[in-house]
Length: 292
Length: 266
Image (cartoon, rainbow over all chains, first blue to last red; front, side):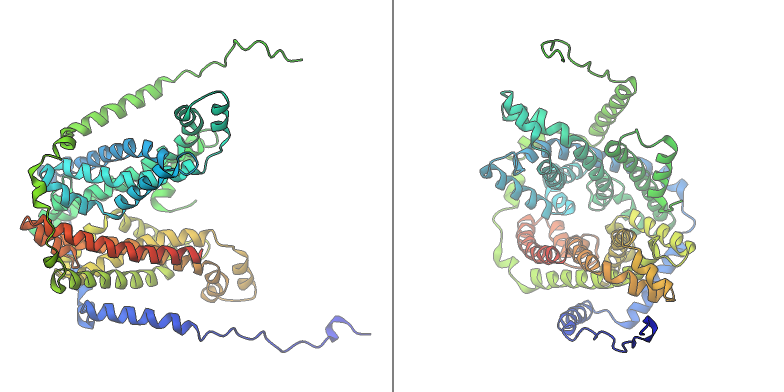
C-alpha cells in the first residue's frame, strides 16, 4: 500500500524564467540617466555639498518671523491667492460646462465634438505660468492676469473631466425626454445635468484645490498673490520672513484641501451614511494620513 | 386596481432649507468680494483684440528661434532635468511608498512619520521648492533637478502608496506564514502585483516633470524657461511665442509616446 508520505518528493523546482531580455530595457534607461547626469554637470562634490547648503539655509529660517511678515501684509497676499483661485475656478467652470456638453460623444455630433476636444487638449498642454507670461503684457501686472491664466487653464481640465462624466451617464432619461417631445437642450437639462452635476461640482472643488497652489506660484512672476512675497523675502535673504510666508501658505493650502475634501465627500456620498464625528475623522485622515 | 387617471397631484417639491440659502448667500458674497479684489474686468475680453500689444507677438523670428544656443540647448537641459528627477524621485519613492502603506509598513512610527512629512512636502507648490533650492544651492539646472526630484517623490509616493494599500494581502500573508522576514515578504508578496502600476505612474510623473521643467527656468532653476524669462525682460514676446510653439510641439510628442506606453501597461 502506498501512502501519501511514500510518494517520492519531486526535487525539481520550476525553471527560473529567462530574464536576459530585461537588459534590452535596462540599457536605454542607463544611457538616459548617464546622458542626463553628465549633461546637468552633476558631480559628486556638488551632490555632497547640496544637503549642507540646504541645511545652512534651513537653520537660518528658524524661528519664523511671523510678526514682520504680518506687518508687510502677507496675510492679504495669501488671501489674494485664494481669491484668484476662486474666481479662476468660477471662470473655468462657467465656460467649460456648456463646452463639455458639446464635446461628449454620446450627446454631440462629431463635427462639433472633435474641435472642442482639441481645444481642451491644447489648453491643457500650456501651463498656467506660460499663460500668465503671455497675459501679463495684455492685462498688466497684477491679480487679473493670474486669474485669467488660471481660468483659461481650468477650462481645459474641467472641460475634459466634465466631458468624461457626461459620457458615463445612463441614456434612459435622455430617451424619456425625447419620448415626451423634448428638444436636445431639454434632454441635456433634464436628462443629463441632474445625473452629472454632483460629480462635476466635486471636480470644480478639486480644481479649486489645485488652483490655490497654482495661484500661489503665479505670484512669483508678478501675477498677483503670495508668490511675490516669497520671492522678495528670498532675494533679500531674509530667511526668517521667508519661512513665515512658507508656513502660512502651507497652512492655508492644507486648510482649504481639508475643507474641500470634506465637502466633496459630502456631495458624492451624501449625508445619510456618515455622522458628524466620522466626517471630522475622515477629514483628519485626509490631512495627516493617520487611520485609526 | 390603481387609479391612473388622477395625475393632477404632483409630488411635493422639497423646500430648500434656510441653511442652504445661507450657504449660497455666503458663497455669492465671497465671489463678489473676490472678483472685486482681483479687479475682475470683462472689458479685457473685447479690448484684447484691439490691444496694440499684439504687434509685439508677431511676426515670429524663426531664424532666431531655430538656433542651437537659443532653443535646442536649453530644451535638452529641460529634458535632462525631467529624466534625472523622474528616475531619482521614482526610485526613492519605491521604498517610501511601502513604508507609507498600512499593508506593508514595518511599524506604526515609520508609517506616521513618512506620511506626515510627505503631506507637508506636497503642501508646498513645486516652484516654491525650486525657488527655495535656487536660493540654497545656487542658480541653475542642478537646483531645478533637486526640486523636481523632491516634488515627484511626494506625488509618486501619494499615488503609489494608495495602490499598495489596495493590493491583494494574501500573497504577503503566505510569504509571512512561510517564515519570511519583513523585506523579503514584501518583495515576494506585494511588489510583483503592484509593479506594472509603479511603471505606469512613473511615466505619468515623467509627463508632469516635462511640463514642470519647462517653467522651472522662470525662477532661475535652469532649462528652457530661463530663455523665456530673459526674453520677457526684453519684451521680446515674438521670440517667446516662437519658443513656445517649438516647446509644446516637442512636449506633445513626448506625451503621446508616454500615454500610449501607459495604455499598454494597465
